[in-house]
Image (cartoon, rainbow, N blue to C red; front, side, top):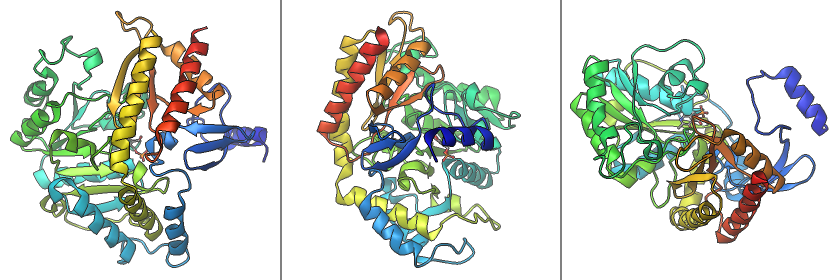
Amino acid sequence: MTKQEILLAQKEFLFPSVFHYFAEPLVVSHAKDQYVWDADGNQYLDFFGGIVTVSVGHCNEAVNAKVHQQIDKLEHVSTVFANEPQVELAKKLAGLTPDGALTKSFFTNSGTEANEAAILVARCYTGSSEIVALRHSYHGRSSGAMGLTGQAAWKLGPPQAGITHAVNAYCYRCPFGLEYPSCEVRCASDLEQVIRTTTSGRIAGMIAEPIQGIGGFITPPKEYFGIVADIVHRYGGIFIADEVQTAWGRTGGKWFGIEHWGVTPDVITSAKGLGNGFPIGVTIARPEVADALKGATISTFGGNPVATTAARAVLDYIEDQNMLQNTEETGAYLREGLLGLKDKHPLIGDVRGMGLLQALELVEDRTTKVPAVAATLRVMEAARENRIMVGKGGMYGNVLRFSPPMNIGRSDVDEFIKRLDMAFTEAAN
Ligand SMILES: Cc1ncc(COP(=O)(O)O)c(C=O)c1O
């Protein structure tokens, strides 16, 4: 098919809600490692990784060799039959969770399903149905997950009962107009008032992203999750860390984002980078929480032998290549480069994130912090012209998000910063 034929077919045969970046959608032809090629043969340096998903590089040979072997051996049996790749992965995950405390996994196909399973298990375990989520969050596209989500743009369909939204730790735009640290992390302690005033006081749990992804890589102060998890437990709930974007070393030096703050959640959900592009979702829970999900449940494709083989190979690769160290060091180097751009381009109001999960929030004016929505679109287009792929996010649509494959090096960062610098200069003119 030609590029035009692909775009026409997309228009005619896909739901129009399958939206694209850019005035003229970018048609991708193929990819390898940190590079992606479009249908016209242009090569891009990929600093978005298919929405924080390509963790160990596009078409990683070590992973794909194992996938090729597995696909010819056993492709599918469903969860009603046991198979080795599924339990191998579950065993491996149990050894990676904080304190080794979360030892039981339930496999699905996406982050949305992982979160659905987490909410269900929280409700079964506690006997309560009330859930606290955060403003500016994103948790997926099922009815339940859209109910949890805290951004109007991603909430289609009717509201969901039993969900309440606490303020998030958005220091750049503090919901209380305060400054850290003199604020004493009021956004965290406010959770108690939220529970006491908007719920029955007996909650099933709270779900939160350690760093809010689609919200624009909003990164809380170090005290935040300790305070919040403590309040949740005091009101009878369990704490669910939605690590769909932040797991597998992405945030630098740790397997899971939540570990940076010394909090051991009761449930972790993840997807995206675990499969490096293979569809897989997982809900990992403390055994007593997992055991509360009585009765049978099926995910036809959940724990699929090919997807679980891919995930196991991704984890092995991350370990073999010492990628947790790379995300920490190369992430710090990327951060330096972004801070350098902030010194140069007044459009950049905030630089935030951790490891190889970094973002820029763009504002029209650094004092008023009015979101620079049109300029963000211009920078996106200019980034494309400079052959770099970046993501967009934030509730106001003014955040550029960067999440390259976790095995990139400093030379990739140098090249990226050079091209992003050009994109900002061109977008300003
Ligand atoms: C934090 C978070 N949770 C859940 C999801 C939903 O995952 P999926 O799109 O795989 O259903 C996403 C997707 O971007 C996400 O970022």
